Image (cartoon, rainbow, N blue to C red):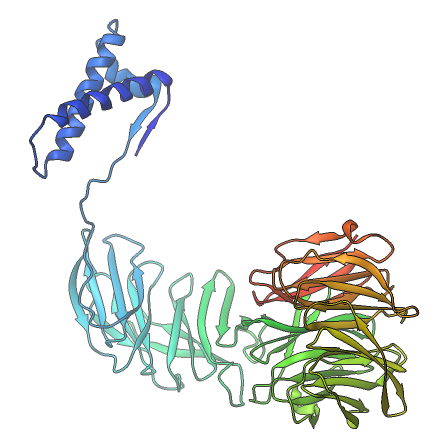
Amino acid sequence: MIWIGHPMVSALWCVAMARAQRSLKHSCMKTPALTLVVLSLLLDILVIEASQLCSASKTFLLEFPQAWSLRMRWDSGSTVGEFDGHSKRVLSCAFKPTRPFRIVTCGEDFLVNFYEGPPFRFKASNRGHSNFVNCIRFSPDGSKFLSVGSDKNGFLFNGKTGEKIGELSSENGHSGSIYAASWSPNGKQVLTVSADKTAKIWDISEEGSGKVYTTFSFSDVGGTEDMQVGCLWMGDYLITISLGGVISYLSVSDPSTPLRSISGHLRSITALTVAKEGDTTMLYSSSFDGVVIKWKVGSGYHGRLQKNGAQNPAAFMTVQGSDLITTGLDNKFRRVPLPGDAYTEAETVDLGLLPRDLDVASKCPELAIVPVEKSVILLRQGAIVSSIDVDYSATAAALSPHGEEAVVGGQNGKLYVYSVKGDTLTQGVVLEKHRGEISSVRYSPDGTMIASGDLNREAVVWDRITWEVKVKNMLYHTARVNAVAWSPDSSKVATTSVDGCIYVYDVTKPASARTAIRNAHLGGASALVFVDSGTLASGGDDACVRLWTVV
């Protein structure tokens, strides 16, 4: 690679390249020394051209770097080392931070390999581990390195020679595979994490032995989410990460409880809802792997609902009075008291079929509606009170704020309006405008409008009094509409789609006056809810929950 800092030098270099190409065209050299010959030729031509251009100076090349800043760099083709000696996948490697430099590797062949250099060459192997060697790390001063593995053992080695000098004591040691290790800044202690759901700090002696200093425990129940798989000791911070994606900040003075935990979703977001808990606004989100996370608006992660060891994906979720209501891919309807911490506290109703949607009457919180394949189910106080069969495939449903009316969307693109009297649903008007399967439908909070979206990328706002279309031409998405949501004051409706975009419409203005949030979620946006009149929350296939300010 060549950097040229002056037009004169650029011209000289172009002339030199042209003359070199002409010379090489008639050359029959095919030897490996060709690169050096070409470089020498280019420099000779450059000297001649520069001498002709700057004949007043016999020392042009000596003065040239200061005057014109010519710098050249090229790949010499020489190697700085070869790494062999493993017969299976390498899982970890480390570079000695001080001279003489060394490199160590470990892998699934139970080996710890030691390389000297540069250029680096294989020096020795250690076969002390009896299972996968998961992590290897040099101490900050390079005097030692540590290997840990699935055999629950940790071995210490001399950082310069690669000789084994000691091991971590088995007394109070890990009872499961050790996945990672990290040295303290002073090199006198090591943090390790394990499949036994603990992290341990070890005191490391000068001779190379280690004994447990303190233990951090993360769970006493079954399941794999609390297995600790990564760790870092950075300054005063001790950080671990679990298989479930929870990042924990640890305190040596209080090993019983992490100072702070941060987490998020690892799979696509399936549902979002907002709840008021006293003066606090909470946002609940669910993902495809069954994780339900609580977020405190304004500060972030606030915990997750425990699943009691079962996978219970909440495909749809809303708040009903003081309860969190969910329906999932396990065909269950659940009521979780708020504030709650676990599904173990939930009241469960078996719906018998896969739910396609869920909604509650905002001002009649004991009433809920769930559409299934060929039926519409009405629930009151968490119990099924009505189930009517329909001659179409029900795909979405909503209840009016006072619960006196319901609208059900079908696979045929029609909206069926039902009156609700007691526990009875009676069909009334049928709305036809959509050209694709209804994917989402919701009443406005004031009950005067209905918003619906379909798989043919269209959204419609209906006037509930006249049943006419109130906002036309809401056709700005390029793929199916996944969700519609109303602002608390019923002045705005938002839509989101597989195309990853969000559009916010003011119902008093034409659709062309929309507000667009493009590329809101990589892979598509799947859930949408207004936190307040000026804040919108969305979730998507990128496993992220985002807040947007709407003006």
